[in-house]
Length: 445
Image 1: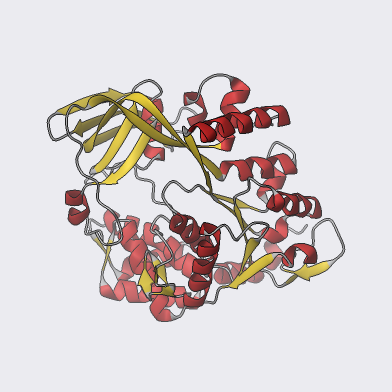
Image 2: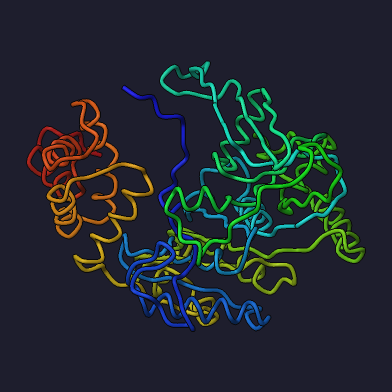
C-alpha cells in the first residue's frame, strides 16, 4: 500500500475568502457555500476595516452549531489580505491556561497583530521540486509520529540543489504547509521560511483556479543570493523573543507559555514603532476569533471592552450558539451570555442551518481537500447523514470511511465504508440515546 507523507489538513483549510463579487455572494466560491446574507454582511465589515471605519467595534456571529461561523471569521481574515494573522481561541481556554485570564487574552490579542519586516539577507530561494519528511515515533507517545529530518530540493531557472535539514527545520516546513510546487525563501542565518506561492504549472496540475489565486514565477539566477527578505512575526512572537533575549528562531518551536511583563511589551511597541517610522516594517492588524464566547466571565468581558478601544487592536470576532444565557460570574441573564453594554457595541451577523444541497457541496469540498475519492451513492448517503445528524458529524466520518476503504484495498470510498464508520462512531443523538438506555448502569454524580 502506498505510504502518504504527513500532511496538515485543517478543518477550514479550504477557505480562501468570502466568495463575493461586487459585494454579492456567489453560491459557491473561495471554499464558501450558502450563508449568502452572512457573507455579504462580512464583506461590508471587511470594506469598513480597509477604510479605517471599524475602530471601537467588534462582531458577534450568532447561529446554531455547524453553520459556518469559524469559516466566516477565517474568510474575513483572508479577504483582508496576505499575511493577515488569524488567531482562534475558545472561551473555555482561558480557564485551562497556566496563567491569569487577562494575560491569556492579552497574548491572544498580540498574536493577532502581525509585523511585516523587510531586511536585506543572504537567502535560499527557489521552487520546491522535492520534499521528503522522515518521521519517527514520538519519544513519549509511540503512536504519534514526529519529523526527524527532511530532504528538500529547490530549483531556479538556472540551477537545482538538494538540502538535508534537521528536525527543527522539518517541523517548521510542516507548520508553514510547504508543498512541492511552492516557491519559498529561506533566511540562511535564522532558518525562517517565507512561502511566496505556487507556480502556474503546479496550479494547473492541481486544478486550482488561476483567476482567484495568483501564480508565482520560478526565480531566476542562483539559489543562494543577497536579497530583501520579507517575513511576518506577531507582536507576541516579538514579546517572547525580547523577554528571552535568545533570538527569534527558538520561539517558532514551542515555549511562550510564561507571562510577559508590561515593560517588555512597551519595549517591543517602541521598537516596532521605530521600524515602522524608518520604513523597515508595517503593522498588519489581524483577526482574533473567540468561539464559545458565553464561556467568558465578567472580568474577561471587561478586559475585551477596554481592548476594543486600544489604538493597536485586532478585529475581534465573537461567536455564540446560545440564546439567553447567564453571564459567568454574575446572576444576570443576557442574549448569548454577553453583557448588554458590550452587545451594544457589536455588529451581529446571524448564520442559518444549511440545506441538503449546501451540505452536499461542503462535503464535496472537504473530500477534495482531504485528497480522497468517493462513489456517488456514498456521497449521497453521507449527505443524508449531514442532514439527519449534523454537518460536522458527516465531515468527521470522511477520514474513518477512507481508512476503512484503504484497509479493504479500495481507492474510492463506498457506501458500505460510510455505513461502517457510522456504525462504529456515534453522533450526539445516538450517544444520548445510548446513555439513556443504559442510564441505570452509568455512574451518577
